[in-house]
Amino acid sequence: MTALRRPRLTRNDWLLAGLGALCEQGPGALGAEPLARRVGATKGSFYWHFTDVPAYNLALLTLWETAAGDAIENCAETGMSEVARLRITAQTIAATSTSDSPALRAEPAIRAWASDDSICAATVTRVDEARLDRLRALLAACGIGNAEMARILYASAIGMEELRDSDAARNSDAIGSLVDLVLALR
Image 1 (cartoon, rainbow, N blue to C red):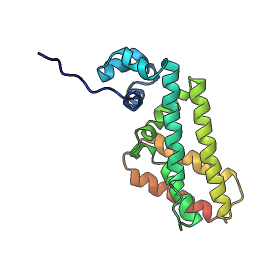
Image 2: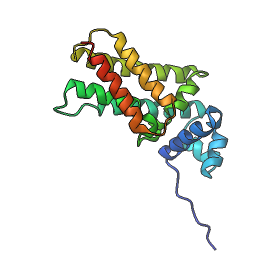
Image 3: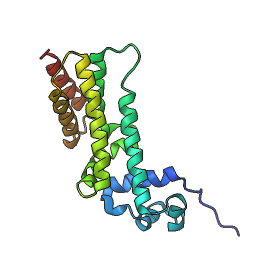
């Protein structure tokens, strides 16, 4: 009798499992042993893909940072006005919890993790600065010279996520209304 072999886990499988664990249980669930139990594998499989837990955590944060950057880059469609780009960028930031990307959906958990982890905090700061830079540039292109408006939009977009409202359309409408209000100040 031959034993059934489980499919080999990929690096991405481990990262997706970690995102789920982080969201459900917090950063304490990101150890090799709890993750191995979660995916039904051995710690050896974990260490096949990652040299240690800090390397794994860095890979997880890099995945989120890349997804966050890609989401903002994808807001710029050819032929779209700067006003439309500003609106969709703010709405994208305010809708990470309903994103198709598991990495983006983990943003609230990553922000919570950043309060106790300096490497995570540095990653969140980089993402925040990149998003703020994009919002500042879009606001400037729309004739809004007050750079603090970017901070107001960004804080509001992040706050939309903290409301944990299951109605993504309502959050999108709300941040869109704030964009309209800021643009009315021109």
